Amino acid sequence: MGKAQIGVYGLGTMGSALALNIAGHGFRVAVTNRETEWVDDFLNESGELSDNFVGTKTLDAFVAALDVPRVILFMIPSGAPMDAMIDAVAPMLTAGDTIIDGGNADFHDTRRRAAMLAEQDLHFVGMGVSGGEAGARRGPSMMVGGSDHSWTQLRPVLEAIAARYEGAPCVAHLGPDGAGHFVKTVHNGIEYADMQAIAEIYGLERYGAARSPAEIGEMFERWNAGRLRSYLIEITGKILSYTDPVTGHPMVDVIKDAAGQKGTGRWTVVEAVKMGQAASTIEAAVGARSWSSEKATRLKSQDILGGARGAVHCDEETLAEAFLAVRILCHAQGFRILEAASRDYDWELDHARIAEIWRAGCIIRSALLDDISEAFQEGAPEGELILAPAFAAMLAQCVPALRQVVGQAVHAGHAVPVLASALSFYDSMRQGYGTANIIQAQRDFFGHHGFERLGEDGKHHGPWWD
Ligand code: 6PG
Image 1 (cartoon, rainbow, N blue to C red):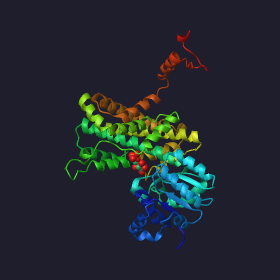
Image 2 (cartoon, rainbow, N blue to C red):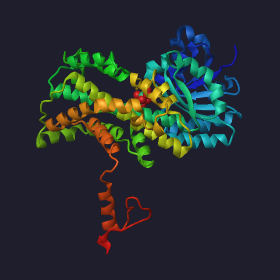
Image 3 (cartoon, helix red, strand yellow):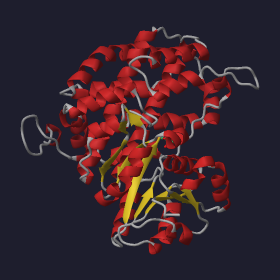
Image 4 (cartoon, helix red, strand yellow):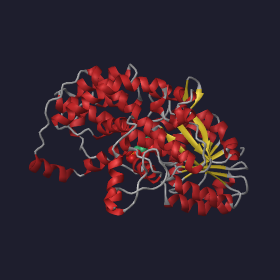
């Protein structure tokens, strides 16, 4: 038997699915796992694909099973476990080998690891993989950061296993070191905002218009047949149609309203702030999850503050237009962060390409991403999606609906953090002269910080110092 073209270390949900996907495309794959008994279970369950696998139970045997230069994909928890595996495997590798981290890693770690391994002529790829288990098995979207050498090694495998949009594989080499993981982080940030916006629309319909989960699910199904088509709208429509087999209630009504989060949304916000950006819609979504998890406090507050929510009367088309406006604005913020990072880290990220590989396979795949890739191909000014003519026109059409929805929500006491922050972003960006003159005056008044005068260079102080 020949050697394996790639090794997959880590046979959890995502690792197994990717290994099966790779083997299913005719590649020979060496597999192993920290708990070695998983290897036999995996091979036993791999059916007719088992001939394409080399099961190994020690790191030595795993490395020895690979073609040189080697390619090893780690699908393990991010953070310390990845560092431990690098320490263990790097001494067994030779110049030109590539280690891939396919987890949701912090891109700073990826940059550090890439620089460290480069000293040994080893290559480190940070690869964002989106699409959950089904995507990993049948076609994920993959965001690759690393050297050209690694991309040449990986490209045939990744292009074979990726999701396809009109035949084109949803995988790209986006830049060096941390670029792939950074883009995946922002993908997840947009994912958070889109999910929260859907939840807010659900809340308005459920508690402001007294519609049943099933009726709201049908609305999302209708939306999914049009310009709002997306994976997240599709699955929400399906979710809302389910009944709890135990109680007979709508399934969503028996799920605790406390959202989990593993960190990528938070990282997006932190990195945006560090670069002097504001990903307000993503921040609102992260914050909403945090507040949601404070269930006990909210229950107590409801008793003290009152939890009444009034009626909201928005027709379906108005809600749909409002949602489209929010979706555009969330993506616009995501791409602004990508632009800032591209400048700071010299990555030369290609926004059009990123939008292209998000059109299939990943969690945020949507009809809108096709329009976004087109807008960036046509050169949306300085990466500013909201200024691309097609998007400026769409926003002009949809923002009035967003105003109506946010206005009603606010009056009736419904929390709509993502909808409202999207609108404030839009309104802030369209003001050529805003209100920060007051901030500057305050800073100068209390701290002698100085300000610029309109049309004049240099630092000035107000008459309050005379
Ligand atoms: C994806 C998802 C995936 C995972 C998130 C969930 O693109 O396939 O983003 O990576 O579902 O990490 O993150 P939270 O647990 O933070 O919601």
